[in-house]
Amino acid sequence: MEKAKPYLSAVLIQLMYAGMYLLSKAAFDGGMNASIFVFYRQAAATLVLVPSAYIIEGKDSPHLSFVTFCKIFGLSLIGITASLNLNGIALKYTSASFTAAVSNCLPAITFFMACLMRYESVKLQTRSGIAKITGIVICMAGAATMAFFKGPELRLLVHHHLLSSHAQLNVAQGSGSSSIWIKGVFLMLLSIGCGAVWIVLQTSVLKSYPWKLRFTALQCFLSCLQSFVVAIVLERDGFQWKLGWNIRLLAVAYCGIGVTGIAFYLQTWVIERKGPVFLGLSTPLAFIFTTIFAAILLGEILSLGR
Image (tube, rainbow, N blue to C red; front, side):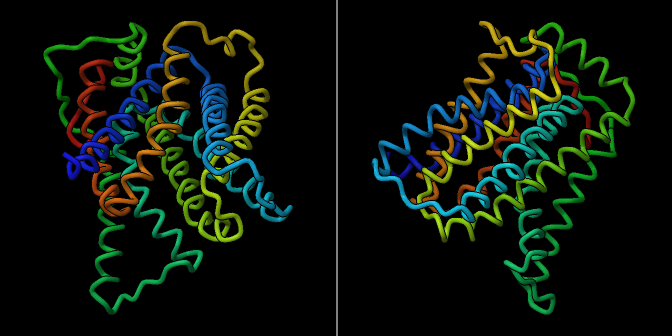
């Protein structure tokens, strides 16, 4: 049973990510503003991570120079605030299953960004270099296929819509303008690009501030402040800020506490025991889970190629 724990944990992580895509999409289709959602999500994550960092890594606050603080602030702005806001808008324009699928491009785009920033190098004369370039091309070709090609529709016999508005939106999206879908694709790729830059630049910042949990908690706190500024500028309607006992509150609590708190910890645990490649190989499961549950629970219309 002990040997099976990393495998079960990896599956659980991808199930949690699938739930994140589904609940976020349901909240957005229910009328929630994406920027407000990101703010509440980061606030919930901050409430979990800050006490955890204090308890696990001790009371003594490590020295944080002004230069390092500015770097962490920039990382939070690019990799969390900008990435999550772009992701939320893209999710409103596309679908939960598409967002989960295109997220699999993150390793390829991260490697491409690392090469541009000279953190990685590629030798085209070697097999490994050719394999890396081929992998990037295949990954981007798959994303392009999902973006621009729409084949015959695949409809399930049974649908149960969590929100009545979601079913109506799916009908509208299925017959609406493709320009909205293309806009969502572009924003999604831009979001992944921001996330890739964030991953690459973290390496150098962690050398000067190696306290990982405090580093994560500080990024969440700073992104919470940044997201509040973005949300207050873009949305002045007080009604949009109300959560209530509905899908909005569930989505915020799940994404902030469940995903950022529990799933991130499980990821660290799995990486320590099986390595980052093992966890990376499990990421397509999130797409499979999301596609199945989005079709059954949210009534998303699937089609070949999309």
